[in-house]
Length: 153
Image (tube, rainbow, N blue to C red; front, side, top):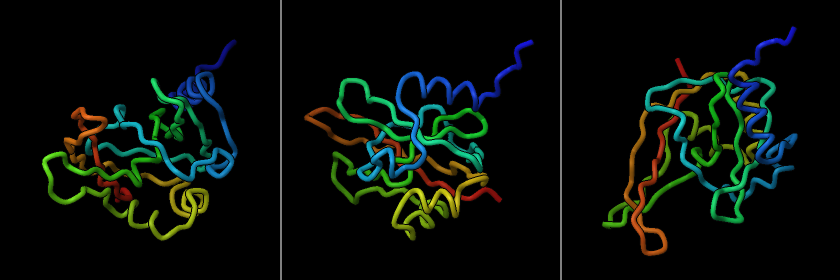
């Protein structure tokens, strides 16, 4: 009898089929982190980063760049770029940076591997606030979401 897969197992299988699985962020070459939107995570939602998290890379459609992610216990794809991605408003004004207790703690580390191992593995985090920023890229306007991410209480 086949056992039913958890949401996390289904999401990991999907990412592995469309990309590559790595043992660490360093092995994935995740130095310059390419950004993808967290379209599957909602403002105010909390997720758990697995204690035995895995690292995945998948191609960004229409590009030769790769996006690096991990899967939460809930089966959500968490692109690590949400921890570092900022945006410059097209209309001018100050650049919008990611914030929150998780982002602040991430900035204390020299590598994503150390940060995940020491601070995120097995922890629950909350996507407290999403700030949509209208930016310009290659002459076109687009909306970039910049997140406040906090450790769940």
